[in-house]
Length: 373
Image (cartoon, rainbow, N blue to C red; front, side):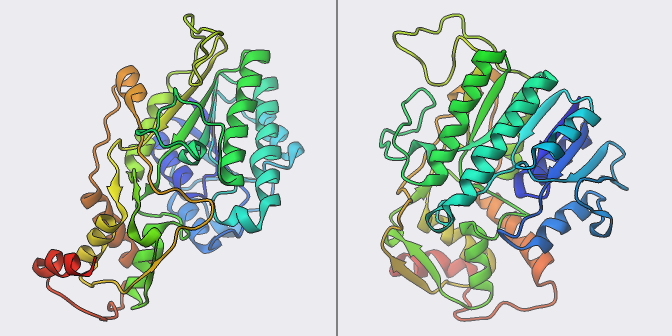
């Protein structure tokens, strides 16, 4: 297949492009390489795929020197003309839209960025897919859409009309916009509700990255809601596996859909919604414990109240992916955290020692940690 992946300088897009290329697909990568976080990390991801920073110019194709089937174009989704040119240039089979303004907390201070990227940009993607008669559009949604929901695990069959951040509202808006295009233009669309993705090459604004960086530098970590939180931490390989399962299965009309008791996860239009997670939440303190174990240092923890826009717990009901596509997450948190810490050390500080605030023996970790809770 020839697949357009937006956000290929980003965390998930980087890993998805690699997986698709290695299985034999052609990939057209698009990213605006904005400075929401360190652009050097973004350029390093592209370089891993054979895309040299020195060759990148806005709107110009760069061919990978590592993967013959990979072409990259720097472009912004809000630039409708640039996006139309990409769709015109390549005969695309499917689109996976992972480019977006990410982050819950950033949306509290920079709301305009979410409207521009996540609403205007996504509308341009929908319009291009419609006119190019794309066979399948998949797009990043988020577990954040569950908002005030307390029923666990979070199910795609439940109502999600109470977001608590503009980021979440923008992702729910994407789902509504996609459904309208599925209904009006018979465009198969699939929403991907990701649950706390982590792993090598991850984003610097995510908890794992922040914690590892602080501990490695001998700085304190901030633990919100006094540590009374849990997340359905999902390793990047399992996220990509879920996406790939769905790319090959375009959304279809649900013949049994009942307008009097409407299922939010499907429709009489070719529209679907899936959670992609591990389906097994882990407490924040247990997650931090695993990080400490891998680094060999007990973190100095600052316990703080809950932040605005955040939720205490997430837990993905992944029965849809399991039942329909035989999806089974494989990577444990123990293995995933270890992989990230090894990558972080290799990428950021191969020649540095960890600052030893309280160096411990790994065998003593649990007893010391438990006395500090």
